[in-house]
Image (tube, rainbow, N blue to C red; front, side, top):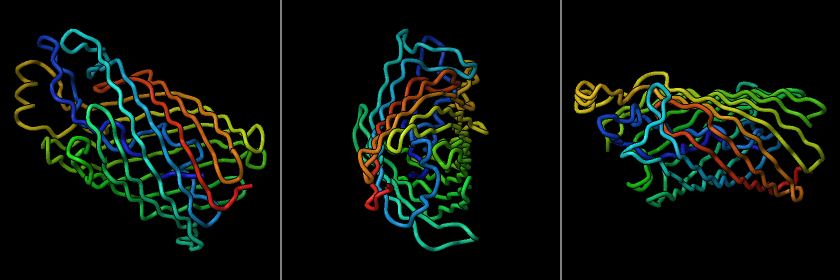
Length: 301
């Protein structure tokens, strides 16, 4: 089935987290896209025309925050205890039309967030989603934009343009699938922080295997980097100079996880994904859990 690019789970701009004279580096530059949440096969344009609904129920928990060297920080002398729950519905339409020899689809994704504040998050619209499909492989390309339409407490308050490509190679008549995907984000300046996050590049990879017609298991991993530092304000530059910190530095995170999915019948699927982040710089580091529900009005078997 499918999904578009997902919404970043941390709709926050982390301010100066102080531990004595040590400030957490680089934590302003959050992007919108969160790797490792969508199901392994979700980045492929559906092969049958029609409507698909997916609901991503996401929980992220972190007890670690790192500086630009990957070292753990303890703001105010205590451990980090951060968690957020989000619901990201995805509405997908696959058409009978072709463009440049590819099947054409489009989608949009609103977001509901609940952490210390609750509300509607930013909206993702993907008007262009193309799939070049053969029997044993497909190549997909999507272009979309995140609109800062969320409530004031949860929006990133900036626009993001997203480009994504994903390739799949199928084995055993489609029972197995190798996946490799790349997502790139271009950000504008945040109206609330006056910071322009550096662009983000996310790489995702995985293998999905159907053990029966209904039971699917998989292993997956991801890496996300900022390709450039944040454009910070003069105040942040002054803090860096006086306290020898690196606020606005490039962040990165790497994680690995597993998934288990089951088709209850030909219309309904439930898939659980768990990912553990094993290294990060200039950001939170924790675990991501997603329980994703897929509904296809047209039975898939």
